[in-house]
Amino acid sequence: MTDTTANRVPVQAEKTAFAVLIAVSFCHMLNDIMQSMLAAIYPMLKADYGLDFWQIGLLTMAFQVTASLLQPAIGLTTDKKPMPYSLPVGMGSTFIGLLLLATAANYSLLLVGAMFVGLGSAIFHPESSRVARLASGGRYGLAQAVFQVGGNAGTAIGPLLAAFIVVPRGQTSVAWFSLAALLGMIVLGRVSAWYAAYRQRAASRPAPAKTLTLPKGKVAMSLAILVSLVFAKNVYMAGISSYYTFFLIEKFGVTVQQSQILLFVFLGSVAAGTVLGGLVGDRIGSKTVIWFSILGVLPFTLALPYANFFWTPVLTVAIGLILASAFPQIVVFAQELLPGRVGMVAGMFFGFAFGLGGLGAAVLGIVADSQGIEFVYKICSYLPLLGLLTVFLPNLKKAG
Image 1 (cartoon, one colour):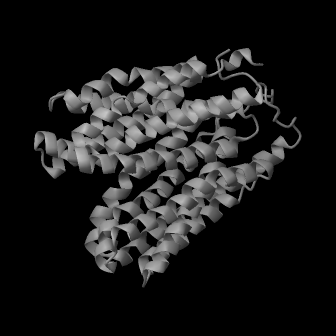
Image 2: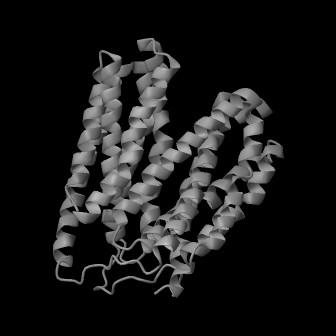
Image 3: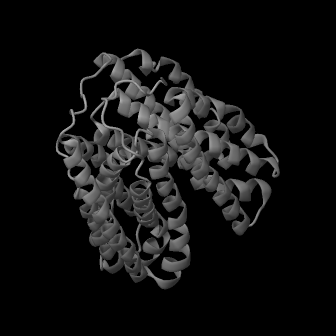
């Protein structure tokens, strides 16, 4: 038994529903394409509406408050009362938000549009993460990895689409992406039908136990550690994603195009690491993967600020592969800590923890303005030391 196999209620074995996993991963990609596009069109909105930087910040806050902070509350609500058909409703909120962003005649409507996009994301993540777990057939790490890799792809593709479609054609072209939201609603309608049928089949089975198998204090401490690990990972990842091109241009004098190619190499390694983490974790246990991922990446992050041009992309690929492998297993580990609270866990880690990471990345931007990009990378190189907190995580196979 691995360290993540305890406390599962014996139920009739089901095969992994790969069609459902691919569907929710595809919709995760669509969702994250649309939400990442908002930040990508900020320069255009700033110029067209004559916005100040505080107004840009308010747009981000309007999105983040709905997308990040509402997710745990929505997840907790759907844990108590599952809502299979909330998935297409959430994508419908994104659809409305994109149309508002495309046609807004004033700043107030831009704020409303950002909030609708954020609300759609807040509804989507907890329930789709639950669907991924139900479709896993017991391969929880793999299911979370397949689900999350769609989001990784969407985050990478969104700014590219904004650069090549929205920026040259103007604000109204954002409306074309509402078609992606419409496609997502159709696909999620089918997923919701599968989800509802699954719940009917499961109605005759024993309900999953929701009682904690560890003391509440131990569970709370473990969740705090997991949130800290995700915070460290997200700050580092956001630091590379946001400032890597500037780092390469400043340190090595590469062209913008070369820096973008290297950024996409890094993002590709992140996607690959996410899948590998899910696959390996199902075999050797979540805690082992978390140990390896967060601490194992430390030599590479410490070396990166001092590497030459040849070794820099090599190191970032290793960092992407290793660091990204932790997240599927962190989610699985948290779901085992809080049995029966899949939605709340998903909301906590996809929403709240990501929001904290975004705030950390914003602080790094302030540091970069005053001390330079290379100094930021030197600071970030020590973030994986938080992985030492993993020693305080319980061994779940001894808890049952």
